[in-house]
Amino acid sequence: MYRGDAQSLRRKEQEAAALAAEVASLLNRIDALGVGLTTPTGGRLAGPGFEIRRTGDRWTVRA
Image (cartoon, rainbow, N blue to C red; front, side, top):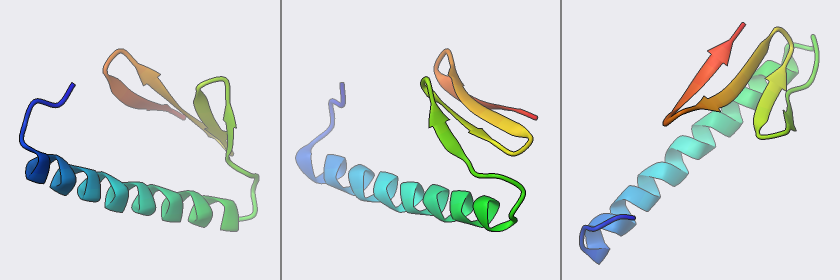
C-alpha cells in the first residue's frame, strides 16, 4: 500500500500509465514482426520465442 501524499501518488500513477503505454507499444512492435502474436496466458505474456512472467516481486523474461 502506498503511504505518500495524494499529489505524489497521482504523479506515480501518471508515470505508471506512461510506462504501460510504452509496454503496449513494444508488444505491438513484437506482433508487427509477423512471427506470432503475444497473448496473455495464465498470469503471463507468451510471445514468439519468449515468456514474460512474475517471479516473486519482479517481472522476468524467459527466451
